[in-house]
Length: 275
Figure 1 (cartoon, rainbow, N blue to C red):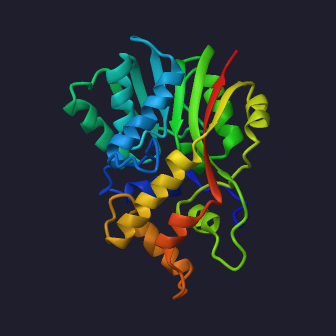
Figure 2: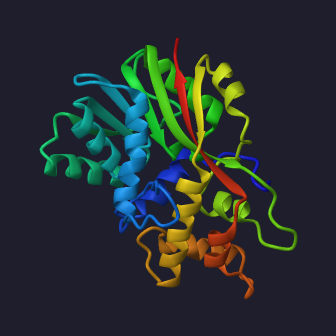
């Protein structure tokens, strides 16, 4: 592992402010290797997995931690009838997400604010449930989980997706973990078995851990690789590619192949509950 510190919220917010061309900011979910579902639809499937585990109903107060451009929050509200508040550290994301909700006639039901998930401006027990789609990868996990536990009501669920350090890089090959953590301003990765301790430290009960590496992360990386080969920045902004190339200018570096074939990183869906 090369990264030992967590990125600052200001730096992460500035990075996402620059991703103004991206229409999909979350991983997708594909059923099998032959599934050719478009990325946006596959991302909705992953949101649906989270919805099913939250168990919220109409009128519930739901917090989206790291809401991106608002697509999951709009889907949450449409499918469940819940009132959703999304927070992000990117001012441009707040603007885009608010515009999206308004365009769907959900401006009152779905709202967005600029806020730091590791120091949230909400009273204890403000929300019935909390979810976080890949956003915790940029945070100090213990602090973020303590804050989520604080703002959710007793009995409420927290559902999130996270990445973990799965296996070492093949000998003599570049490390995908190194590229991902440095280029995408990720905090230090955890191990596959770390969530029981993380949950206990935050005062939460671990309900479920589902490994989504093959159907979510690895398939998403293959889609990203395909787009990189086509010089399409719909899923990987040019800022990230430039940062990787500046850090590792080796002529031998083939980032698309690295993304397609690496199994260093894993992905989990985690369900927690405040009892």
